[in-house]
Length: 363
Image (cartoon, rainbow, N blue to C red):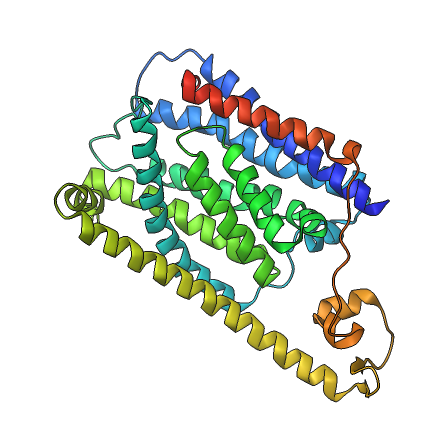
């Protein structure tokens, strides 16, 4: 019954996110604008982002997992993989930088493919003030980097990922999270690269068993977007990165491809390093546990000393050692009514994403 509740909980959470985005975009769309200034633009972003992120992506999903899922505050956090913070999670900082560079390449490719189908959406970016405004910069970082890193990760890679993994396994869960994250942006220009990011974030959470690396990576990725946007407008160091990319794309495409492949390689290397650092700690803990345990020679299994529970075995990640090398985690098959609302939310995001491709409405 707990698994059924959890699948219904993520369905309701996804519905909150999908409907919340639409409601807030409608509200922002019909707000009368009397001056096209960057301050007004930021105010509209705040009007959209603050309720969307804090209420529909964070508060409502948290309350659903707490009250409908019958968990304590600590239980919700643990189920959302928000446990102990490890120092090696800080490797997600350089990882986020290279993910941002990778995202530029993927986004550019996707927009090129869209343009080949005849899709065109004029830019609606409001020019920044002539002189740098620190308050605007902080507001941009909060709305673009801080809130999405915390709220979107909690909604999409928190309890939802834990629940989905029980039904789909690791690979299926990564695909599920990728599609969901891409579609829930409800913007055809963003759907592909956000899906790629969603897959990478899900993989990171599954491998590290923590949401923190994904949050850090998400924050740094979005922060770089804001920082280099300002750097380009105000002539800061690194502000010419976009011009450099445009130059290579027009004159030395192979150099650009080679650079992109190097960036992807470094990104993969950092992920491997994070996984290695975690596995090293897990193996060390396993060795310490085995030293204080018995061994069933006949069945080739470790016999834990003290109180035995399946939760303890999973916490130690010693399922194969304790239950045998042929151990496989049982899959849970949710019933149609458990995921009906979630499927409806996904269908809604597909329709709104297609809507932005045909009409570009609200964007």
